Each structure stands twice: as C-alpha cells, then as structure tokens.
Length: 289
Image 1 (cartoon, rainbow, N blue to C red):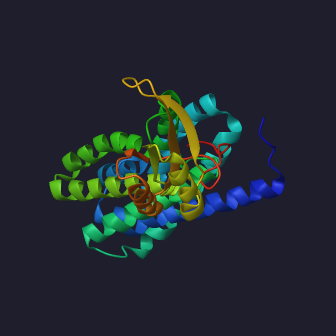
Image 2 (image 1 turned 135 degrees about the vertical axis):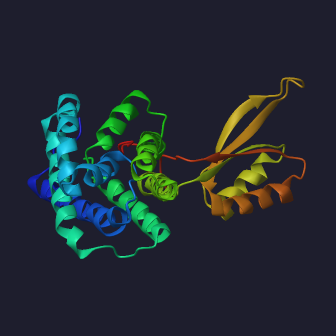
C-alpha cells in the first residue's frame, strides 16, 4: 500500500493543481476561444456551445463536466473527484475572469501552437498531481485502465478528432478546424513528453567472441550497466555470451565505436527503447499515467 499523504502534501498538490488550472485557462481564454479554435474535449464543446447558445465558455465547461464527474466519482472514488472538481471549478472561473482581456494574438497559427503547448503543460502537471482536468480526461483515464498499452496523448488525439470535425461543421470554416487540429496535435505530442519525459534510449544486443573486452570498455568509457546473457547458436551449437545494455541516445555512438574497434565482425542489434525503469531512469514505483 502507498504512503498516506500528509496535509502539507495535500496543500502542495492543490497549489500545483491551481497553477495548472490557471495555465489551462490562459490557453483557452487568451489563445483558443478568441480565435474560435475548438481543440476537442470539453473545452472544444464549450467553445462551440458558446457560439451556438450563448453563456460564457467557462460556464459551459462547468456544466458539461458535471455528469462526467459523477461517472468519475463512481469509478475512481470521492477523493479523486474532489481534486478534479477543484481543478474544474478554478479553471472554469479563471476562463470567465480572463476572457475580457481578449486575445494575446489574432494569428490563428500562433494561437494554435501556444494554446496547444500550454494545455499540454497544464494536463501534464495536473495528471502528475494525481488528478485530471475533468471532461474527456476522465474518459481517457478509464480507457487507460482498459487499454494500458495505449499512450495518453494518442487517446486524446482520438477523442478530440470528432469534436474538431464538429467545429468545422458548426463554424462552417474548414481553415479554423484545421488550426484546431494543430492544437490537438501539438497537445498530444507535448503531453507525452511532459508525462513520460524524453527518456528515449537505445538497447544493444551484442554477440561477439570479444565480449570481455567490449564489456570492459562499455563499463569504463560509456559508464552504463551491462548484463551477460547466455545464448547458444542454433546452427553451430556453440555457447555464446550476449551483451545486453541500455543507454541514452547521446551515448549510443560511443558504444557502436567501441564494438567496431574491438570486433568488426560482431553481430549487433540496436533497438529503440521509449520507456526505461530503473537506476538512472524512471522509478519502477512511479505511477504509469
């Protein structure tokens, strides 16, 4: 069981959630809404409804979130929903309060890029604080439980596509919808970076008769861990030592050069590794979002 959070920890979490809610509100009120960019999710629906039926975008955001939060309460419990409800209320109020200040830029491309980036940062922060921003975030969290191999950013991309398409129909402007699509794309790409980090690495499998010298140099010159796996050639029947090591991308060229110098006839498999847990990388005990 995980450790119980102290009141100090909870206050810190809510301060972080407050900051994330304000960042999200800035993205909506200063970049997306003034330029009629409906980037998907509850925010996109709220912007569309604002144009159709009036009421402020922040107010629509709160109204739409109510039934979704009830579903979240049923699936994730009251404690989880309290932090999400808090984010939703602060975000909705902040959107309405900041709206009168108008757009920071009227260039739809700049608004799409900045809005998408700010939303990604906001979502990443609030997810790491153990909450969500409500709306489709809860739906995505449910899908992540059912399909844990699908990344969060990819799921947002799918759920938002339908809303972007609807915005093209409502606004009768394909260009605006395409800019909204840019928001979704930027958000989904940056969200994975915020959540998972740029911890892409290279995994080496090296088969060589000079495994000892190669191992020694990798340990000393590249300074990464090495594991020896015992293998056997299917044709020759000879037992071989296979070198297994993982390193960050910027170190991979050094390892390749070592192998090239020690044994030009070595058999090497280099595989991209996007998620690494353990010493020097992410903690295995960290929650996978």
